[in-house]
Length: 407
Image 1 (cartoon, rainbow, N blue to C red):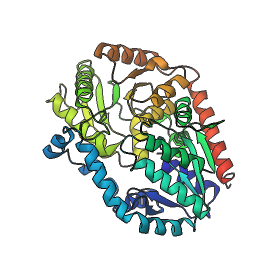
Image 2 (image 1 turned 135 degrees about the horizontal axis):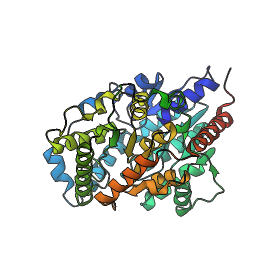
Image 3 (image 1 turned 180 degrees about the horizontal axis):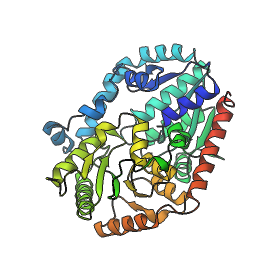
Image 4 (image 1 turned 45 degrees about the vertical axis):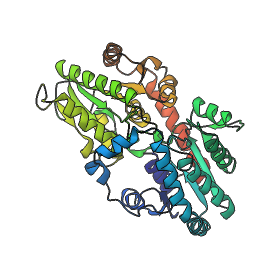
């Protein structure tokens, strides 16, 4: 979503600009965004067909599940990966330096760019490498509306501390992110701007007038289930946390069906969450009412599809940050399940802290009560104005970075 927003913002302001993506899946980036792409790391595949992960992501094998439970196995796997990558690093860095010499700026696109959920030699080192190479190549390195954390490893803190210091422009999204940067030795003052997704064109163009076009009378609930702490699909997975979460979501979905709701299970992170969504449907077994339990993950080929699907819901229950931001921006009542303070802060920014529950701590009855309150109260006054203010702030940041839109 953020990448699409950024590409659109640049095109509106600099229609003559040549845009490249630096991507984990260059082929997908090229087909999805209509730009040329360069691999972000050595040895990465150059292409994946658009939507392929959403349709054909396999469930983890039994061997992978067993390996994840062996103490230290994940760390050994990542160490072996780092060793293989190191052998390719020097030639890749030289090629990347030559590539960066042709660019004016590199903009870090995403929402939680500065975190070490996996391993210091993966995302943290990657960010460090590109910041260093950009500095040597004299290309501006821009962090716009970044979210940060968690950053647990001292080595990750080292990589990120230098990578941010080498940035030519840095703006931060929320208080939690500022605190994380300060905890690793960076000092402000930090420029603050809301998440870039507020300026996504599809959010501006989609209105609640487009909802309920099917004529369906039953309440429609958009339910997002995620791979939270899944032992093989989540960094630092923990089956002791995943299984209680999954059981509670199955029970909640069952009670929604019993209450006569139509439940549309969706994902915004298709590579892993679609697997869990399918497992939830299997756990529910035969639907209590045919046609009222739907998994729409395979239908969501791009961000516009996700926005459209959320706009057609009466209430959304979401765990991922942007899956909660989208309904807020569209004026759809939303209940959050936060696994990270960034989501808690998102709701607090709107004065809706009671509409966000801790994903580890919530009890089934607490979730049901909060859901009924959100459904009854709808969208409070002031949310629309707050969304408009956030959108205007993001557009102002784009004007600062890329100039005013071309009329």
